[in-house]
Length: 123
Image (tube, rainbow, N blue to C red; front, top):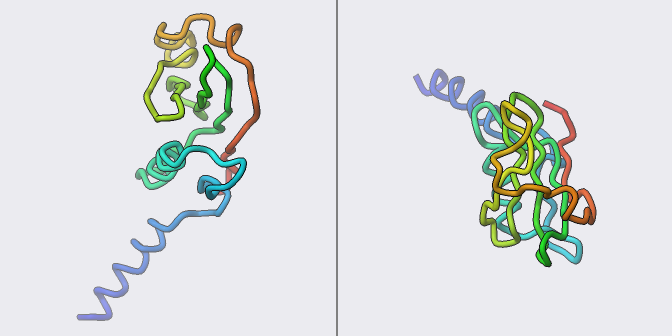
């Protein structure tokens, strides 16, 4: 009986384990992203099935540092969070590709700083 239980638990534990280190957000450091942004990435990697963003890019927007989450597919909104993880809106994406209308002109007003995280594609 206990072998049957072990045989059932091991595959579940393996499925729940992260697939690669690059899917996890970078550890805190000089060039790190806020802990709440790292937490959002890690939570999305634990979804069933996983739904990590394709990339996260830092921008300066209206004098603030913001994080643009670019989704991989499926008509999802590409969303922007501030450095306290408050959702500001979706400048693009969604069914129409025009976002949610809360950040009109985001890409003309925002200045890209760098890509801070990118999904490596290994599943």
